[in-house]
Structures are given as C-alpha cells and as structure tokens.
Length: 137
Image 1 (spheres, helix red, strand yellow):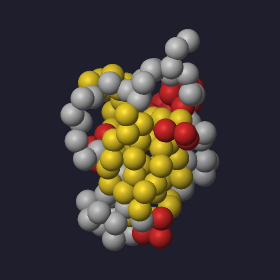
Image 2 (image 1 turned 120 degrees about the horizontal axis):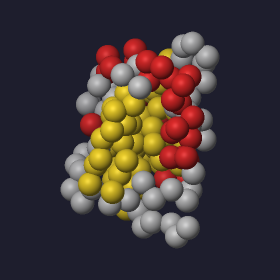
Image 3 (image 1 turned 90 degrees about the vertical axis):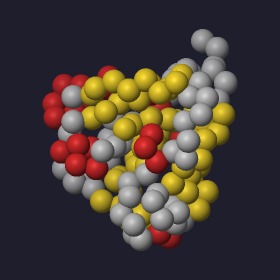
C-alpha cells in the first residue's frame, strides 16, 4: 500500500499553553464518540500514529486523567482545562487529536462518523488500524 502524503496541522488548547501538530492527509476519517467521556467534552477523534504527532509547547501545562482500565491517558491543559489530544485505549501506539482543537481545517476533508463508545468492548478494535503507519486516513 502506498502511503498517503501528509501535511502538518497545528492546534492547541483554548488558552494556548498546550500546542501540538499532527500530520494529516487531505481526507481525514474522524469519529464522534458517545462514551461517557467524549460525549461530555465534545471530543471529535482524529487518530494518528505516534510518528504523525508532536507536542510543540506546554508539556508542563498538561495533566493526565485515567479511569476504568487505566490504558487511556486523557490529557488536559492545567490552565484552561481543554482536552486537545490524548493517548486512546483503542490506539495506545498513537494519539487521538481533537479535530475541534485544530487551528483550521483548510485543505482537509473531515469525514466524521459516529462511533459507539458506550459499547466500547464490542467496537474498540475497529479503530486499531488508525494508528498504523500505512493508513491513508
């Protein structure tokens, strides 16, 4: 499979203390999850491999919250409380970026699909491919 070309897109929390970049293709598969966490914070998942994510500012401004299995590492800005990205349980080898925290979506065809996170055990494995390097999304 030929790897899609990716361009780096910046984003961050509300106050600007935490900044990141994610390398995204022109067409991005995103998920709107209905689990107890995502539903409350309005997170729209764009899952990327480790190599396509970089923290550019604010490592010391991040706090982490874990619950249930403790695998997911939910990160929040200590200053404004925004969850701009986190290490997801479904993809512990990658990152989930909140599409709503990207500075702009120019040049990106964001395709948001519903994900049934309330029944995570039945559906979580369907996201595992998104953090692999050979994925076009």
